[in-house]
Image (tube, rainbow, N blue to C red; front, side):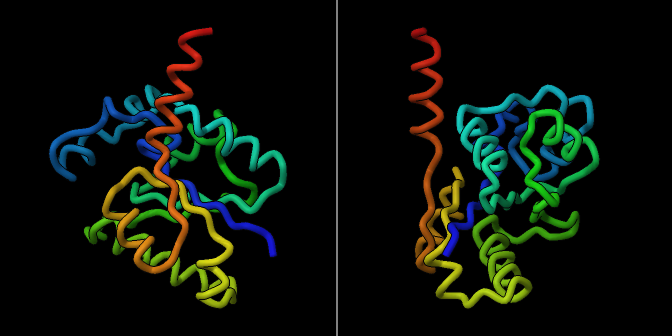
Length: 160
């Protein structure tokens, strides 16, 4: 059975720290096309891009409310999975990131007709959010925190 990869965006494959605020309202206010264009790929983005180009089963699983500017940014950077496999939040959805993503994985399992146990066994999830890590690991998912990978890669690049 093929592995299914789920990548978070912010703090995982995209540095959007210039758009962070203290609250969800701050994030929404700063979520403009102009600010989105200032986002930068993090080192893990190279692995995501390679997985997409290699034909692996890559999905985006983000708590973002995705707009056209987000999709355009992903296309420009080669990070939109084939078929636009993007799972994102609706504007009115204010659940915690962990609860939101667990719900979306359950829907994914049902939509793709993959048994829940098989989805947990086949999935690798990259996410920097502690709530997501805790919630999904508690359900038996493999969740990789990209922080150390991104930090090591950035340090290594700086030494070259």
